[in-house]
Image (tube, rainbow, N blue to C red; front, side):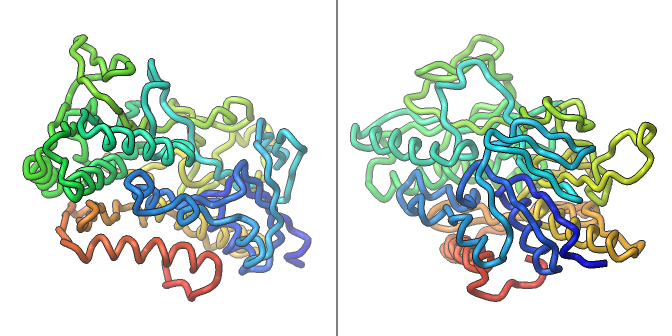
Length: 398
């Protein structure tokens, strides 16, 4: 078997797609990576763009630099249709195919009435700059009401991004405090669920309550969001949370492209996979293996109720897919699955410190890390960028 004869098509230039390309190249397979952006965006450290502690170029890694470091073929195009059984993707500029197909283009977002009235730190990367502009305008004014929060998706609870909402709000609090104008601002954290952050575990949930009280951050929990308006959020009972600026992270659901495909989807529109990240087609019509994989936010993941999609899980899935493709080609039966690696792991930054959060089947914990935690996350951002560019060695498992 000559690996050069087996081409892999990877759709997506995020954590999952980039990691897949890197590890398949390490194994000698030719890879074509298709992305609708010409840069890899390090979302976990974008939380500092709104407060001016990081610049956009600090967070965006040019894909051409990653291409040069790892030798994959790079195509910048927006995919409009996936024909997975043919290992083919249709883009605005052309058609792409391979012997193997890896889908890692992320997810869509749950739609809300009045979407135009909020910005999201987990939306399009450019929104981080718009958030900064809005915050800077309020700071120039000297006072205001700021509301930040996140939503859920009952059809797939794992596709939620709550951590960045906490982080941005804590960082805004810290910046206002440094400027000596914190007392002029009303900060509110809101979410439709009764206990946002509960998936982190009881200890972490209790500690979050302590944080809110200590920092004088109001909370608004347990009411479904009816709509967003220019001056606030209206809830199901028609009560309203007034806001001069709203930052909100909608829950994820299936990417719109998946509706224009032959992929098996769950109720939320995410791709059904098994533990090995193989797409679970109906094999009755064509019995042979399809050699199609879905990873990261594109996939419907199984596991405990507290499971959550994070970058490190997406990278585990990517490395497993590279291993499994190679095993298939080598005729080996061994496979690697993602389920045994499910956990919640993050350093939740506050601007002047952080908290280490961990959750697995044994429970969860949150450990405060004053001062050093902030620099630990800064260091991770530097490591993420430079290790992916091949400028420094990678830590095993990271």
